[in-house]
Amino acid sequence: MKVVANKRESQGTGASRRLRHAGKVPGVLYGGKGDAQAIEVEHNPLYHALRKERFHASILDMELDGASERVLLRAFQMHPYKLQVMHIDFQRVAEDQKLHMRVPLHFSGQESSPAAKTDGVLISHVMSEVAIACLPKDLPEYIAIDLSGLGVNDTVRVRDIKMPDGVAPLLKGKENPVVVAVTVRGEEVVEEVVAVAPAAADVPASAQKAPAAEGAPPAGKTDKGGKGGDKTDKDKKK
Image (cartoon, rainbow, N blue to C red):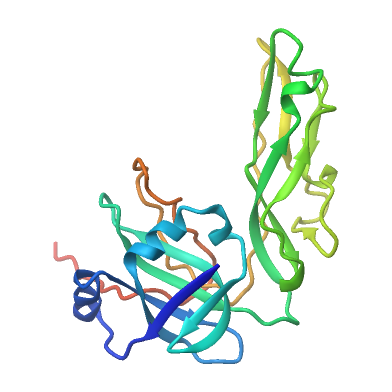
């Protein structure tokens, strides 16, 4: 997928507000061998792209003032109640450096499984995405999980998933969180706390989750790290 962006010189709250009024989204491109660069992107094409799953878990081709960059979407921020993208962050991709990403899980075969054909059975999808590490060339758009053999009281865990070549799950020690659980109705279900593997150290946290809205893009991603959008802090006087 392609993103068209332009460099921007003016920064700050006022400059960002003018950009948004002009139908554009302020953002930042960082990482790789280049310096962090303030950018602007047309709002409407970006808004519609954010509604596509591929845009969140694929390497994107960015055209920046005519030059080509390979990038990943790392964070975006939505308006609290409007269907408006307020800020977006992209990271440059280095072909020889492993990526730490969260990719969606696609389930198939559940309807034909023994568990689905058994009365009084509940099949719970505990996770909808998984954290992985891989080189850019091996990054999958999604990871497929076949549930056609799922039986009563079966559990599918992260280490049970057949990963694509060159892809490994990001787990700590003996950690092995539940992805899918099959239980009999009436039995107590014990919830597991799923620990998220740490993201790459150079990934910033500049996105906030927006309230759910019909037709809105998926909630913004949040990564650990440091760079963010154009924000100002106001001192509170008691």
